[in-house]
Amino acid sequence: MKKTILLMCTVLLAVFAYAQQKPRIIILATGGTIAGAGKAADRAGYEAGKIPIDDLVGAIPSVKKVADISGEQISSIGSQDMTIEIWKKLAVRANEIFDKNEADGIVITHGTDTQEETAYFLDLLVSSDKPVVLTGSMRPATAISADGPKNLYDAITIAASPKAKGKGVIVSFNEGIFDGRDVMKMSTTKVNAFFSPNTGPIGQVYDGKVEFYQASMREVNVKTPFSVKVDTKLPRVDIVYMYADAPSDQIDMLVSKKVDGIVIAGVGNGNFNKAYMDAVKRAVAAGVIVCRASRAPSGRVVLEDEINDAELGTIVSDDLTPQKARILLMLGLTKTRDKKQLQQYFFTY
Image 1 (cartoon, rainbow, N blue to C red):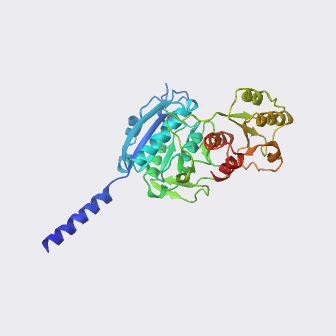
Image 2: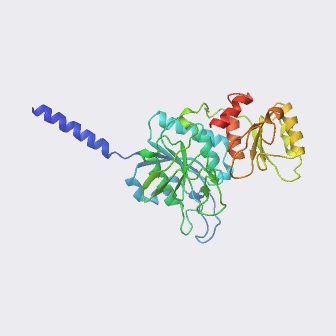
Image 3: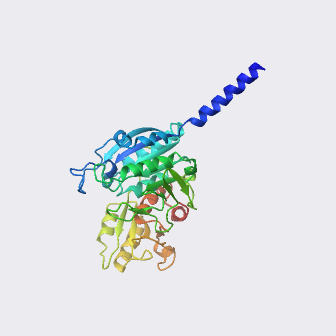
């Protein structure tokens, strides 16, 4: 009897101890405004990526009640200088963390300029259903009313929440929760800089409480067919911007550079003028994969609508922005050059 009671007490203590364990969160820091330092608190000018991740976490001591936190400095740059090499490091490290069960969630601190691109790249490559949350700030750490500490606190709270499991890569900003595929930076300087024009936020975080109201109907990241290693060489895909009376010089130049793909940031429903049309025909004839996207911030580019894509030899981005269409085309070209399959990627991911 005594042995049975002792065994029951041991089990109960183990269960209680397990319940008291805080989620393990690893922060992968890349720099950005959130780690920026300025000469004066009342001025906008600053140098990005100057403050190490340990100092950023140290500025919000209450977050230690939320999770057991550790940090790794991947880079210390402004996100205008983000590179594919850093993207690959992030993707490889994130998958390694989850494969080795080093953490229950990941937070990535990142500059805002290209945060939406990094989020989508990782969404296509991270193979776990555990949370990956990107955040940053619009004001440097040294500024009056800096928004970085609150954004970082919220991102850690989301990454530690069981509700965030299976949601793919998330961007957390100004208390909004956005799907990594759909989010865009919509303001150059305001603290509410991010939004998803086609879908809106998928949830919000407020006073340490995480709530989700919807989820993307696209394939979640655990089903992605794509993978990269640090030494993977990705195909070159460039973006060409369409505008009134635009000449074809940029397209022809890229064809001469033997690029693998071109995304046209077209007008309206992915349209372009006769000069572009003729240049696209030359590009397709040279074996370049051409994807029609739109410079408009919302809506879809429709296949076989105003342009005969089958005849022209083009594919469409669906509702991806040009910068995100470039990412999917790069990864898609690591798998195939078949246009039907590439088009299906755009309708799936």
